[in-house]
Image 1 (cartoon, rainbow over the protein chains, first blue to last red):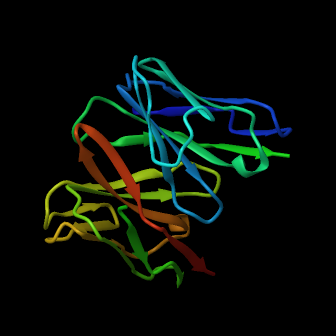
Image 2 (cartoon, rainbow over the protein chains, first blue to last red; image 1 turned 120 degrees about the horizontal axis):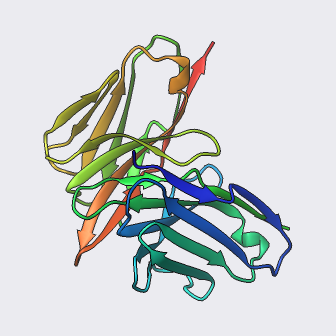
Length: 116
Length: 113
């Protein structure tokens, strides 16, 4: 159990395009979903925390108008990178957590975003 | 902000060797987690530690939550080829009900044939 699916797994697009990434919890309801970004050979950095039905909480330095997060249901959160530029190229990974407290986060397989 | 430093940064070992890596923090965490990440994939949870001093095993993996709550180590015994990957420690903190997972800098494990 506890499977998290991300789509797409890989996307290449032109500069200025907006890109939407989906994160789904397949076999459980996720009260909270998290979005991370990972640059090559670096660690995962939390971008934002998303609770179902409420506005996302963004980490310091992450532009909320640039990275739009929608968590409309207990099984789906989306991240939209608006007007993407080459510096936005990265590996974006979501995670989902069932409930609260000591429930672990389960991670998707990531989305490789390349902006030309 | 919180920083988690892992050492060593990379390891080159032969199959069958034991591996030890650790993670230190400038802040206290109430939960420590160890993840493994394969290239192009998301991290997979290996072990979760919830109490200071706790020692937990998962097959050939053993991890301990340091008494000071500022460190943790992970040991892998009798390494096999599928152990290759990047290992991340992570500390879970809670601030006004908002939980945050802070990842370490990672240890890259390579097995020399």
